[in-house]
Amino acid sequence: MLVAFLVGGVAISVVAGLVLVKVLESTDVVSESHSSAHPIIDIDIGAASLIVAWGVWSGRIKHGLRKQPEPQQAQKYGSSLTSRVLSRGSVTMAFIAGLILNLPGVWYLDALVGIA
Image (cartoon, rainbow, N blue to C red):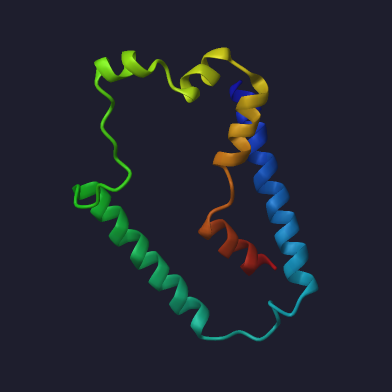
């Protein structure tokens, strides 16, 4: 299942990268002229990323952190859909999870624009 997950992740990254570079090369979005705004945007995004990382690390940003349900609640509602799907051990589901969880992020897309 791990191999299926990794293959799904690599597949989505490579396919998205090739498609994006080909699309950007066929349009006028990228050209030979260089503007001075591009490095400034990269520095701003990097600084914002560092601030968010510090906030999460220090505990000041707690968005997305959930408490585990109480054992009584878990017994009341039964196991979750995610738990039931993962307990089956499906290679197809591992591949699909690899596709979904490895969608390209901002830095990957920025690097592809630089490549194009």
